[in-house]
Image (cartoon, rainbow, N blue to C red; front, side, top):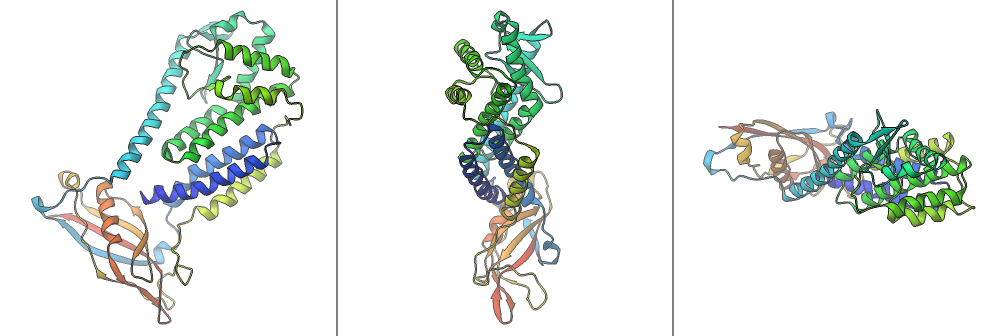
Length: 388
């Protein structure tokens, strides 16, 4: 849970930076803004992975091995997963389940579609859509058979532009990241902005190809007018979604808008800025103390010593499953003798991991010393669990 909360704090910095950049680039092309939001989503997705990688300082940190915590049979108090973790898992499961249901619904629409003159049509499609990565498909609603060839061609080119940009893949990645950070309102905003800017970027591609803005806007309005109450899978890339229609039409008819897609130099610049942003925020958070740094053992820095220890308890589930072994924690032992910034680097069991973190957070230490003064020291604590 510490990893998730730490990741959420760092994600806030990244998403706020993306929001600021998006506002600053509001007169730029939609393709540039889409790249900004895509870089932000990718950076947020990488934060938990970056925080999970043990840092090079860990092998040289103080290693404190704690004697085995032994289950005392019927006398032990069973502990469950922290309720916050349960709530998070429930929310993440709901968002992921919604995405999976959407993919299955898109597959059903594809299977039920009819092929005419090389084009897929379906009564179940509320608007033109595309989905899939390895074998992407474009599906038009059945009423599209009434359109002229030119009208159909514009719509098909719109969906094919999404395929060329890999928009479905990026939106699925955004959905997965949103599932992990479902409690974070800025992540939902980023996912919405990514989808909206992708549509606007494709609109710009179509207009740049020579299509008249008024004709193209009329096509979007016609599709929106025909939208039925038929539910459309959220996971597909749909040509029209009513909440975004007014903004898109206004942008299409605005002659001052820039239509050029993000060039290679712009893409590289955005990638470099994203990397420069994620590197400093994806490191383990540091304690705030007088010395302003965390020391490693050696070179005049003494090892902290335990002066008060709370025994971690076995969970009933771990006892029933006969789970034994060690939980390894990376901690910072402060000048006050407290263990802070606790991260599980070697997991044994979710319940035992949580109990080890809870116990160690209540321990008290004689802090490490340097030049006769207490300093904050990085340490690795190994908590052993064994059954009688």
